[in-house]
Amino acid sequence: MLFSKLLIESKSRSECSYNYMIPYLDKLIHSVKILENIASEDYLEAFKQQTLSKGYYLLKEGEVSHHIWFLEKGIGRLFTIRNDIEVTGDFFFPCEIVDSYRSSALGLPSNVNIQLIQDSVVYSLNWDLISELKLKYPVLWEIEKILVACHAGWIEERVYYLRYTTAKERYLDLFKKQPLLVKEIPLTYIASFLGITLETLSRIRASVKI
Image (cartoon, rainbow, N blue to C red; front, top):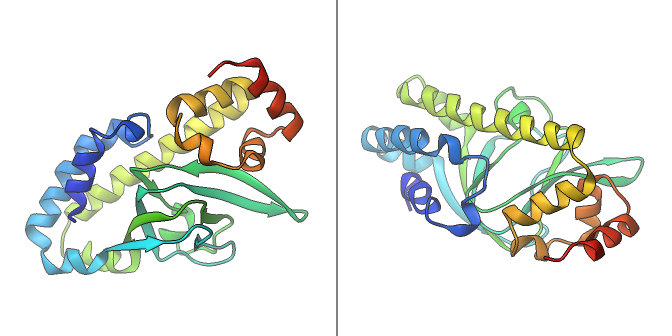
């Protein structure tokens, strides 16, 4: 399936309505359509569908990422390990770009792990090949610019919620965005993401009616 069609379909999918790419989606669709019209086989070579199992690592800490991914179906999580404890930084949901931009774009070893926590369908884009094709198809620079804006928006939102909201507010926001999928995430991951203990999470869950 063409990437532009996936992006267009995501506009009508309820589980995609709150994701961080929405403000940039129309511009991204426009640029991707241009690429698809002019790049043909070169583009198709860089864009591959994969069906991957729960537990699969898209990226491990210390590796250099050579891909970015569009998550069509499933859930991913971003985490690090500190003092032998897994610390969940965020979750990825359908219709989102999954990436460690620091690693893929800058060629640096990743300081995070990205793991699928459900059986998933992803579309991978080979960043090395895309980088080569940018010399041939300048529209790829515009696509990269949009993806950087998506990533920056995601980071800004994450920093805001960590600094200016309570754990309860963050939990309610997560549930509002993905009411069905959040129920599929182990509570230990959610507690780690919120920066609270399982006991505190249990009290929050008991205090709200969802």
